Length: 139
Image 1 (cartoon, one colour):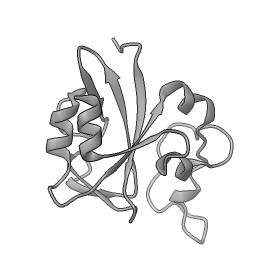
Image 2: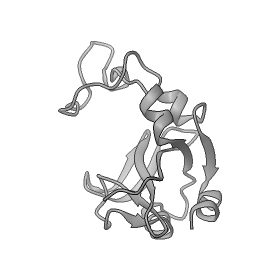
Image 3: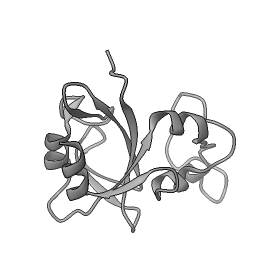
Image 4: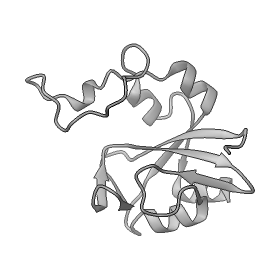
């Protein structure tokens, strides 16, 4: 059962190309952004639907195992209720100039009305942490 303390974490970096290891899509994957759930359940844990690591996973394990040593991910941590109230994605970032999806879209409906994904990735709706700050704050 999920605890009451939940946060949504957007993972990216300045170049919008963050490498994450142990991903179902192919081991080491370069994402423009990635989203996980941070929850407090006898310690802070990360739930990542795309990881091959146990999920949820203790934050320290997730951080140590998911990111290559040369990678500099940035984590924008958003309160879950803030995310639910304000996030919107019509998936326009997944469409090419001709109007076709670059990859098959998820089967679930789009979220909200319009598009503000990059505001969340860039920290407008939450607090931004470097990896070392994330480790200190949630372990």
